Every structure is written in C-alpha cells, then in structure tokens.
Length: 420
Ligand code: RNT
Ligand code: ZN
Image 1 (cartoon, protein in one colour):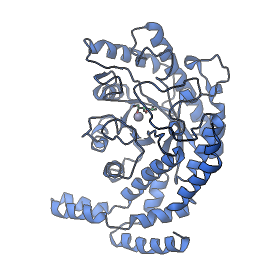
Image 2: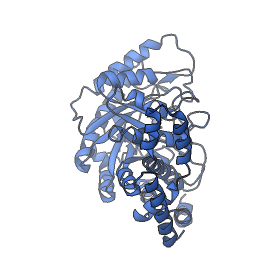
Image 3: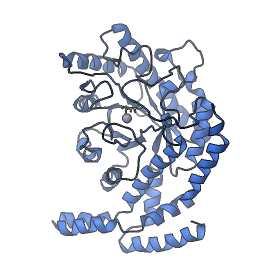
Image 4: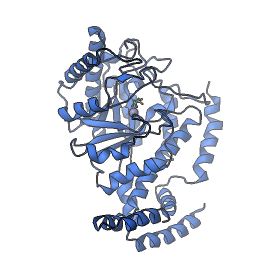
C-alpha cells in the first residue's frame, strides 16, 4: 500500500471511529508509549553466549532455519533490524546467559555489570530499556532440572548467588537506562513422575528465594517477578513453582506474579486471570506467548486470546499495572520475521483494544442489556482498525504490509545466508 492509500484509508477510519465515539489519535498515542519487552532469546534459539551448546530445563526450540545469531554482534544486528519493524516503545528482555564475560573464568554466580556493558551500550544507542532474567537452565550446575530446590546445598547456593547477582546487575541497568528493570524468575525445577514428597522441594525453593530477595535492592528500580508453570518437558507431573506456589509467593512477598500464556491447562487462558490476580497483587508481568496444544512457545499471532489479553489491560485501565513481555522461540522460520510478527501483533492488539467503543459496551452491560453488549462486541470487529494500524506504522516510520517482509527477505539473502 502506498502512502496515499494509507492516508485515504485513515481519513475514512478516523470518521468511522469518531461515529462510534472513539478518538483514533488518542488510541494511537495511548498505546504507543506502553513498553513491550522484546525477548532477546528468539534470535538465537535460547542458547546465549555463556557456554551452553544446547537448551535444557524443560523447554525446546524446534527447527533449524538458516542464520541463527551466534555472537553478540550478530544478535544485536538482527535485533536492530527487527526493532525497525516494531512500532512503539520497546525494552530488551535479556537473560543472564547472554553475558559477554569480561573474565572467561567467571560463572553465573559471580556475574557483574562488567559482563553486560556491551548490552548497556547497545541499549543506550537504541534508546531501549533493559529487563532481565536469571538463567536457571542450560548450565552444568543444574541438578537435572533442579536449581533453587536442589537437595544439594552447594547447588542451591550457586543458584542463590546467581539470583543475587542478577538483582544487582538489574539495579545497574535501571541506573544506566533511567528506567526500572523487571527481573523475572523462572525455575524449571520439577519431576517427570509423581513425587512422594512434594512439599520438601517447595520448602527449599522458598528458603532459596527468600535468601535471594534478602539482599538490599531498590524496588523502585528493580522489579522482581515469579513465573509459574504447570509442566515442562521431562517435568510433566510436578513443578515446584506451580500457579498456586508462584502466586502465593508473589503475594506474600510483595513481588510481581508472571503469567505466561503457555503455562496452564490447554483450556485455561491468562486473559481470564489478569483482573482476578490484580485484586491482590499490585502488578503482574505477562509472558505473551502462544501455546499450541502445549507450552509450545509459538510465535504470537493476532488471535482471539491475544486480543482478549489486551482488551483486559486497556478496558480495565491496567496499563500501569501490567508489564508486557513476549516469550516465544521458533527456529523453523526466519527469526527476525518471528520477532516482527509476534511484536507487531502484540502492539496491534493493544491498539485495537484502545480503538474499541468500550464506553457503549460498558453501558449496555451496566444496563443489563446483554443483547446489545454482544451485538456491539461483534460490530466492533467490523470497524476499520487495520486502516488505523497502517497509518500508525506510517507515522512511526515503520514499514507495513509487504514492505517489512521484503526487507526481511533481503536481509536474509545479504546477511543470514552468509552465516555458518
Ligand atoms: C519457560 C518460561 C520462561 C522461558 C524464558 C526463556 O517455560 O516460559 O519464561 O521461556 O525465560
Ligand atoms: Zn515465560
């Protein structure tokens, strides 16, 4: 679509939305500044730079598309390309395994900000905030899938120290970037088969986590979250940090609860949980992902659940209380395209939520007129939101439609295909 067509489409859309009582300019402005935390690990199949050759911890990447980023230079080059396709405010979500070790002997229990200075410099150049994650997987100190709840005191201590180092580094990120750093704790700890003693691991986990959070960090700068999970590959029967566990821990310790879209029973959706959880915890973190039959971490598409998630945030005015990060990893398609598709959809769904004629729908509901509510909800789908999206991309100087796809293809030919 050329600029003339986009502008013509927008003129029509603006009027159509105004008729429905929606201010399109305000919707764009409101959603543009909501930060989306881009998961760095889509670019290299969750391998990182601190020594792992393969991925472990009950998660898996399938596919072997050409051009996996294997170095900091390659990953940042790919990220820069991907960023150019994604409108709106972005943060980079880093895992500790992406350390650029300043001392090759240094391990995860001793990382410092020194090991992340190239990332800080890059984030400054890109004007993008930094979120962070301890990496409790793909490492020889893992006790099978156990980390913070290992029976080995030495192993637990190693991972406790890792958690502490990550909180410290996140404090530096916040100072350097002038904005807080959300730090998500996900531990794969779990059993393939039914445990006899399901409580002991949870006691150990609680002790370990309490020890980590006993360090002095500034909660205005460092915002820790605990992610729950129903099961992992090889941990099908029991996970230590289950939903009840993680929610309970977050609630009792004043931390964020992280809801990952793929971490529940297949018929459960996280959109249904946001306003429930926010009655009791201050803020939540979302891992926007797409489960296909299981926690498959497919690239986020603009499906009903994605829209529902964003509707929940925007309709309820939870923009300040919900942090949004993506969490998918697909190596069967071009990895930059995966970022572009997943993040563009996430942003698009936010915009569509802000474009919904929600006041009319809300009134129908308050009046008990559920016929009207349903009719309006369905009519909403016919409003020309896509024309607003195209215009928004144009204004943000981000390619839309086929343009970004052609650009990714060109990058694939000129850069990705030349990689080993
Ligand atoms: C795993 C969790 C976790 C990871 C990332 C890499 O099931 O979803 O968030 O995907 O930390
Ligand atoms: Zn996740």
